Image 1 (tube, protein in one colour):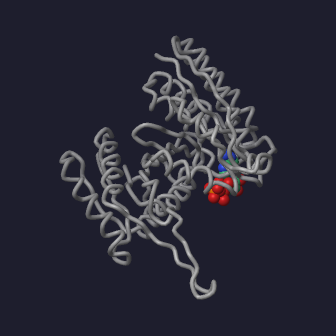
Image 2 (image 1 turned 30 degrees about the vertical axis):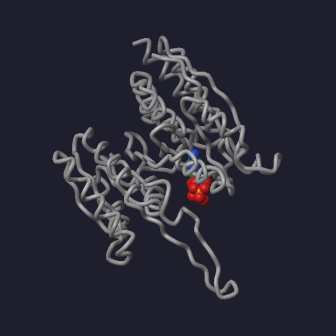
Image 3 (image 1 turned 135 degrees about the vertical axis):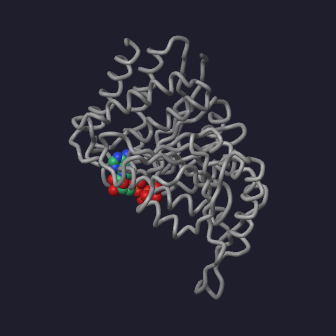
Length: 341
Ligand code: ATP
């Protein structure tokens, strides 16, 4: 058990609602787990920060992240590219880990789903090398794929798969069309696969993967893919398992890590008190694991599963009528109950 400083960015739209709910739950976990001490350093980034301070990602926010043991971040709105895309590159957070599970009691397309998307987080079209030609009548974007980045993301995926019961990696690309960029990605992933003889692998084109995620999502274990494919497939995967409101994520590098839900600022429901905080709470659970606090992470997940299994706690995105506060209260109570038993 240890003491940790966590930098917290509340973000825009529903961000403050889901982050505040998560902090409340983390405080309950801290009370329940002897020796665990979390201190929160609230810093700003995003559209609100751009409006009030003229900059979406102030240096003091970056400094706070560098000083913290980990960062918990809510979604930001239009300035996402200037905040999280920038941070991923600046801090070399090269692995975006996005687990998807169907939880009992949560209405979803298919039960028995449990897979992780391991998305390369620092290159591809998200390098944002874009320019105009022909007096603005032609737009060009450069897709950057390097051996170094393919190697390290493949290693993360195979490492992860080697610790999971099914030990299967699906390498997702589109090398029949993008033969050089996707070709390199596929080739390097297969080279890395040789280092993990206990893990099997398959290749799948991204369009086939999109189809199979709906038709047979339970067939997947670990999916490794490039930046933009991973971004799109993860929103689809969230819909398959119930809602964007329950899909967590982690941006992991060798030194730093930022934990955030995969959903955006959801301006359509911001301020209504009905946002599902589950994705951010599960991101905090991933943060506890990354900090090595596996007992606390397990306690948090069990409390969350218990809360989700009772229909009266479900928020509207999951077909229920509960508010963000109702769900948060249920998780806190479940944390307290679990540690009394
Ligand atoms: P981005 O491009 O920034 O990822 P987006 O345009 O994909 O954002 P989101 O903000 O993620 O959109 O929202 C997509 C839909 O999902 C919206 O209708 C929103 O209300 C819903 N949604 C997203 N997150 C949640 C949540 N935590 N709880 C309930 N509904 C949510």
